[in-house]
Length: 426
Image (cartoon, rainbow, N blue to C red):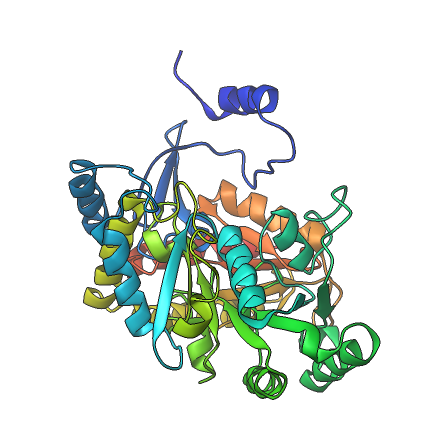
C-alpha cells in the first residue's frame, strides 16, 4: 500500500516520541528549489527552508553533483583518523571570508548545538574562565548546555532541569517588549555586581538576529557596546550565526551589518545545503587553546557534507545570492506592508528583519501589541491549505518567519506571497 500523509502520521505517532514536535502533518515525497510535494501528491511553496537550511534551495544541481563526486571516492574515514582535503579546503575558504580580526582557524562538527558547545569549550580553554552570558529569547540548541543558554523555557527547558551552572541571561532589546539597549547594558552591569564578576566571564554569546526568539535584529548600538565591554574585561564575543549565516541577511554573515568583529562565529544550517555540517570559526590563537584530542567528533566534518559546503559557497558567489537576499526581502516587506494596511486581514505588526530573514507578529488588534498565538496557529494552518509551508517563532509564539530559499524564482516567490495573503484574510 502506497504511503500517504494520513498513514505516515499514524505510523509516526506509534513509533516516534511525542517530544519530537512536527509543525505540519505533511510528509515530504520530493522537493526542488523552493517547491515541495507531499506523499499525497500535493505541491507546496516552501517558505520554511528546513528552518534556514536551504538558502541554496532543495537539491541544487551543483550541490548534488559535488556530493555524488565525493560519494564515488569515500563517505567516511573520521577526520581524526585519516584526514582529507575537503575539510581543509572548506576551512581555508571560511577563514578567508569570516569577519574575524587577524588569522582565523575553523573546526567542523555536525549540528548547530554542537558548534555552540564547542565554542564554549574553546572560550573556557582560552580564558580559563567558566561564565557565559546569553540573552532572553535567544536560541542555541537542545543539548543540555545549549538548552541552558537558550532564553526560552517552553518548549525547550520544561521537564529537563537542573540546568548546567554558570549560564546567565540578559534581556534582549525589542521595542514592542519595552526593552531598550540601555536596559540590556544596565542588566549586564547588574549581573557583574550581583551574580558573576566580569573576570570570571569567558564569553558573551549573541545571535545577530534572534531566530527562535522572533527574528529580532540585535541593534548595532548593542553589538558595538558588547564589543567594547568584552575588550575591556577580556571577555570573548561569540556570534551565533547558525541561522543568520551564508547570505540569509543580505550579508554573508549577519554580524557584518554592524561592522563588529567577533572573536568566534558558530555556523551550521545553510552551510552545507541540507547536509549535516556545522563549524566554529575563530581567531587562530583562541582556536588553538584546547589540547590535541580536546576537539572533534566521529562524524564531525563528514566528507560528503564538506563537499556539499564547498559547492554551496560556489553557488552563493556565482548566483549572487547575498544581493538576491536583499531583493527577496524588499519584495516580501513591500507585500507585507500592503497586506497589513488592509482592514479585512488578521492584524499584523512589527514587520522586520534584514535581507531575506523576515518576520512579522500576529496581534489581537490593530495599533496594539497583544500577542495572538492561537490566531498565529490558524494562519499557519490556512497557509498550508493554500499550498504554503510557514513556520512560527517568538517568545510569545505569535511571530511568523519567512525563510524562502534565496534561489527562489520571482514567480514562485510571488505565488507564495499571494498564498500568505489569502491565509491572513480574517
